[in-house]
Length: 383
Ligand SMILES: [Zn+2]
Image (cartoon, rainbow, N blue to C red; front, side, top):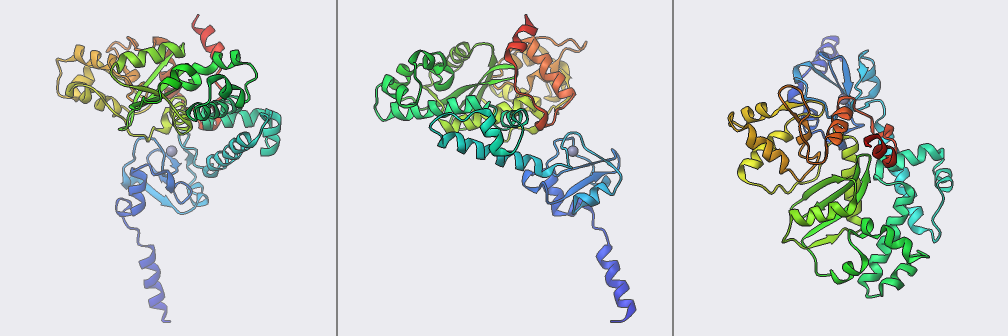
């Protein structure tokens, strides 16, 4: 081959095409999680490199360079982004597989496996295993086992067994212990659940988060409520008040998985919540809520700024009312709206929770660093 041709071919190959025209750019714009591990990108203006799904504010493609491998991204000399932890693309996937494996092990066992047994099977220390399990599922292994038993009880109830027989079949040796926990597992008492087989419209379940109890409810259209509070029963009554004509049904196991995703999102808002939302409000409220969703994680705006953004500069009070009417805590981030003078102002789910959410968004945590929630400590810190 003539030397000149080789030179030409080399030049053709190395001619950079604008990043904005590269199909990989669209995946960065979409924060496509499935692209993680396939390529990385670096941003000259900020000096960091990221994985494609990074939740940070989008860079100008003119300042972006794409890298086929992690090595090449690292070779830029830039630092790894703290938001998306680009050096650990396989960690999340590996943890998810480990946790899925442990879940199957719990489901297969007659006797609930101990934490030490589960950790040994995963080849991890009990402390690490417990933390990762909690971060991935939103539940402790013990709670997961309890939820699994509750699912078996529900199955028993649906098959027509008596409440007592269903409880004993599922391995609870004292019905008193079951009743203690039943509200948070079934979303309502067993007898009511049994009578409520016809309820169909709103599914819900109550879980625990580091911010206390969390109720998640969905219609056919999507997640319709995320409520935070100290007491699960109060949240369920609150849900009934907010949807007075709806038939409420306790969530099944699939639904508990969705609740776990919402809990994970509440713990680490930067993860994003890729679930459809069912927004119920007036056209004005919907405009406000849309504007709230456009406030990036980690920043705050004033009521007056929201009023400007939706083209209703005099409507500050109505904006505050629309924030108060929000039924989707964190997903519609009304906690990111503060007073012009910087004061926190109110929050439907308590000023302490608003402060806690803003604090954690200001200092984002990686998923792996999320500790199991210590609700007792949270409560005493509020006392
Ligand atoms: Zn990043």
